[in-house]
Amino acid sequence: MKPNIQKHVSRIDALADKNARFNPTEAAKSLVKLRRYDIGLFFSNLSKLDHRYLGEVLLELPLEDFECAVGRLAPHRLARAAEAVESDEATDLLQQLSGIDPALAERVLSLMHMQERHEVLELSKYEDDQAGAYMEREFLAAHPEDTVSDVKNLIREFRRNEPGAPIIKLFVTDHDDRLVGSIHFTDLILFDNAMTVEEVMAQTNHKPPLTIRPVSPIEEVVRLFEEYDLNIIAVVNKQGKLIGRIVYDDIYDMIRAIETGQAYGLAGLSDEAEEGSVMQAARQRLIWLVFNLAAILAASAVINLFDKTIASYIALAALLPVIAALGGNAGMQALTVTIRRLALGEIEYSSAAASLRREALIVLANGAALAVVAAVVVFAWFGDPKLSLIVAAAVLLNLFVAGTAGTLIPLLLNRVGIDPAVASSIFLTTTTDIFGFFIFLFLADTFL
Image (cartoon, rainbow, N blue to C red; front, side, top):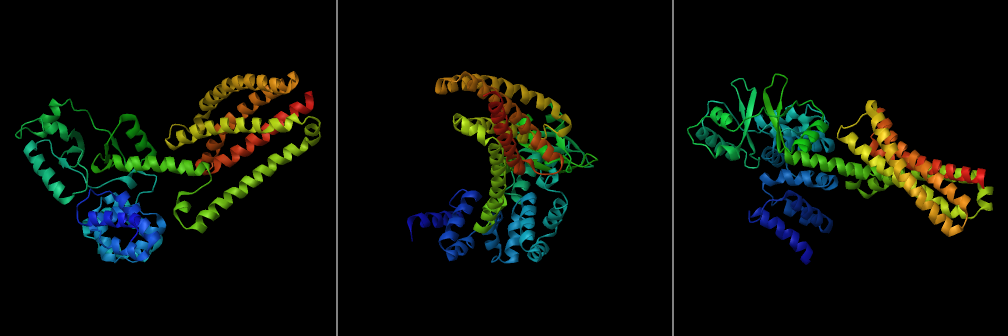
């Protein structure tokens, strides 16, 4: 066996023998490498994974490899794997299964224990953009009259029942399950076993905990974690009863997914397509490239309108890419900032005026500076003061158009229900190229 393949087999063996720290991402990468090399090795090493690890590893696999894996795994093994992970991950696992084989997903769900099955069904009610979809039903709660000794016993029991769930905060609830406070476990160890939770809260300058409703947009949760450096947040229903928690790893995964989606979207790519087959990725990219071809032809048509002007002043042809590139870069800066703020819920269409003013001032300041630099360079290059002034004016005007378009386009697309991360860049490129070429060539045709 090749050394690089043996490395991946050894990694799975170490995990199976419990001699290595569990890292689902690394384990999934090894399985993917083995599948590319030998499908038999892929399945033989997949079978080595204990059900306590299997669920997390499956969720880390690309869609194509996930589909291949679950097609051979027995339903009862998938059920045990779903029971071993947190409730939100079990829900993700069943939803992925449902997307591939609804009958298999139903079978796996029916084989799960009643409590875990109930949790999955509850979490499945929430949409992907709601906080409840990322909620864990596993949490540790105590009453105000419980002692520190009682809490330690609760921790031991929780760790036995939920070995993989992080223990970060103790939630304090009344006897109707309404959340009344929370305590960091690092604070608990400072107090005597006989002290009550209520006394600990009083001595630790307790503040009302931050909470979120399960139907709240997930963007609001992301903002809370970023603004207040949270590692956990309680989820309560409309009566204030504690029903779950959202922990840092899910939110960091969400932030990473948002950033990945934005990066793919700006290039006209799809995360799902790129993780799928070669044909899926090629088809997705081809659609985008066809749109780009149409945009380029539109810009070329503008240039063709001024063919006689360009023929008379060959220098114009050399300077056209400068105008287009500067406008495109300035527009992409505004576009990236706007899409990011939309994703985090910091801006919406109704409050666009302030963002437009800000971007207009930024691009005008940068445009003025670049116009001066471009004018000096063009004069030194061609020795034509009139051409230098035309280039300066075109740069300034095109940057203003680009900054405005980069802000308005994602806002308008979001307003009509189109994902701005996916569709914005093609509209921006078309706008900056057409307006940039037209402004420059129109000024040249008028004043040269």
